[in-house]
Length: 164
Image 1: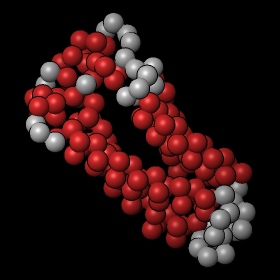
Image 2 (image 1 turned 90 degrees about the horizontal axis):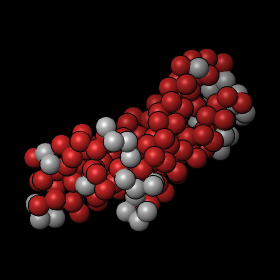
Image 3 (image 1 turned 90 degrees about the vertical axis):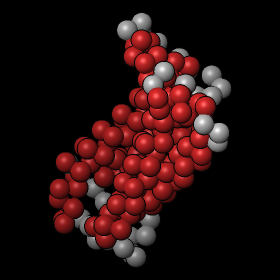
Image 4 (image 1 turned 45 degrees about the vertical axis):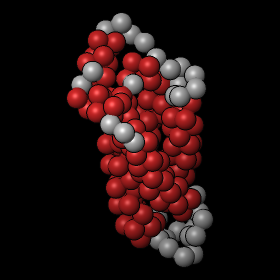
């Protein structure tokens, strides 16, 4: 961990939020449970959309319809995961940031976010041309593989935070 970062993490950990999460009965366990539910609500629909980009269900649903129904649900899950994740992190910021899994989780979160940005500002801008095709463009399929890989890695790294 960088020396300049530790004082910031100590302030977060010593904040009212960090203290409340550590000392309020069942608060940490409740946040952890909600965090897992948030991840499920985020990743489940995102993976379903990614699988559609990879060609699964191409006869059943256009990419645009899949996006319209699945991605807003993922956004709700992301909101839940971010809020609860910040609460969990505030309780043990110094220890969690010192875990060897922390750079992996942060890096994979950044990769997942950049992938979404590149996908929506790139190949998805011309979705009307390929929304109902049985085979999506290679950049869309690459984005789907990156998404599935990055979010899987985020989940693994998140679990490893407690152990390494």
